[in-house]
Length: 40
Image (cartoon, rainbow, N blue to C red; front, side, top):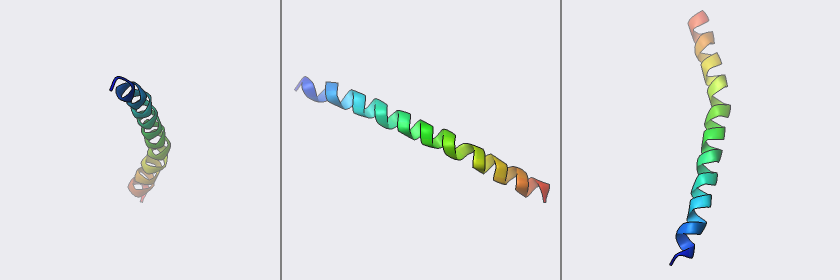
């Protein structure tokens, strides 16, 4: 019972890190598209 939470925590941290990395990676292009839309 004690092993499950200990193994789930690193998994959750890894998923959160990956999700934040993907969000940071996808944010710049979206802002550029918004700027292009405003330019027009």
